[in-house]
Length: 166
Ligand SMILES: Cc1cc2nc3c(=O)[nH]c(=O)nc-3n(C[C@H](O)[C@H](O)[C@H](O)COP(=O)(O)O)c2cc1C
Image (cartoon, rainbow, N blue to C red):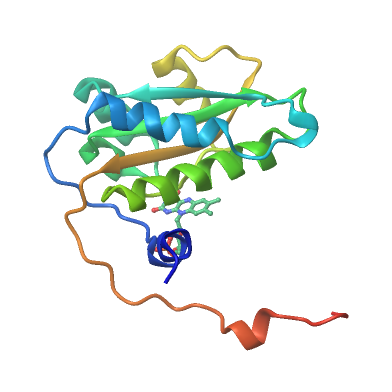
């Protein structure tokens, strides 16, 4: 199978990580993949915050109710940007997926943790010093995987594909 297709199909959400650092050059590679995602009008409204300090990861894990496992990750990438750009969420989501697929292809595990319009957003902004006019899109905890995920329930190809008309 083609390597790209293999990475897309093999990616899973990983929420348990080994206690092992991810080298800085790999983190830069992930952000490089993110910033090359498609962007409406090529506005590239995104900013990427890379967090590796254990203390900050712990604080994030405490406030992100659906992502307490952030505190066990080697790193967490936070995607945010200016909502004045009406495509921030779409562009930021494309960048998020690029990171997830690239991380998987490099032997890392990651998970998309909801960031947009969540009750914990103000607390996260305070912890990370994110200006009030910025909106959060996603959190991506990353590390070397320490779990094997069970086969997931997916909607069948035949069920979701529509040829020519709905
Ligand atoms: C927009 C979005 C938000 C998500 N938020 C969370 C989250 O807050 N916490 C979490 O554990 N997983 C979250 N996920 C991961 C999904 O639960 C996961 O992708 C889904 O169960 C399918 O599993 P898979 O990624 O292994 O294919 C989110 C995924 C998306 C696309």
